[in-house]
Image (cartoon, rainbow, N blue to C red; front, top):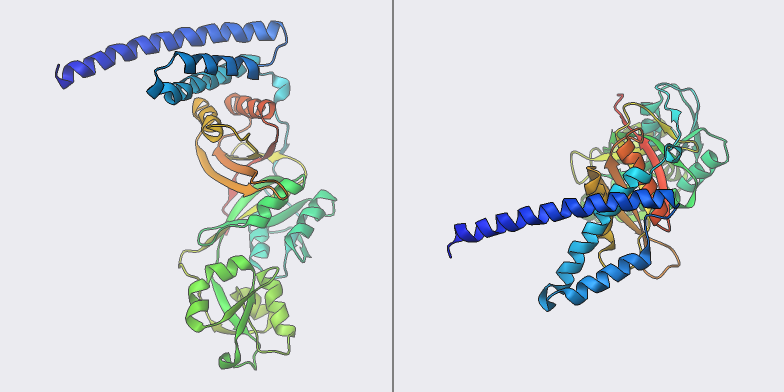
Length: 373
């Protein structure tokens, strides 16, 4: 038998598989209707376990695991389709319309001239800035109602994710209302009377230190972590020792520091993405990004099965980030960004499905990126 004949056999088998798949899905929809009439949950663990156990016993030994993957995927597709019938309009996420302009208070880490300050002004040029010493204080200000919004770095194109921001998103009941991107061009700044040959230690936020690691290594300097870049610059200004700070040129100039070197980042195109925090859920017609956080059970193919749901819904995942849960034995929380709008019924159904199936699920926001200069 030649290759063409073998491929023809596969084509015929695929046709039979498709017909059987469609037949099975139609029966599954009838099951969904029955569950609606009898107020039964879509996901029934024992029934699924029984099916998998039976499939494994019927499979040839070398295909046992593969058969399990095939049928768990079929069942996941089935559940997603059932949710399309069972989903109720009452499960929709309500939100406020995101304002295009605002003079509201925005909580901002650091001081004037910080990159967070620049990002806040980029989103709301006329907002009232309230500065706080650290990231957690910004979250607290939003949750307590002292500021309607807060600004927070979340990801850098060179140094990666700002891990503390993800941990605080889990800890506090805040949502993402918008995002923006700021080009980061760090400089090394010292007090006007400081000679560079005397500088041995430099202070900045750990992200800025990572973004400038090559320069730091080349100059033989010792990096010291500080709460953020702007406050590090203030610390250097007030210190009686010959320290250096990595910060923005705007911050250095505002504080009267001497700029020793400009553009010291490892990459010329170095950007940080900032998120705008709010206690309320905001969205808009042009909101294209959805962020959620969730945890998964320690079971075989749990992440794969989660991704199947997004594929069935026809949604494009933009980012997956995992962070360990403190005081838990290797448990993690996943942070996902995907394209979509909560006004889209397909998206709303997926969110309702995830909320009903997972022990921990949090909707973080549906927002757009602000591009003002």
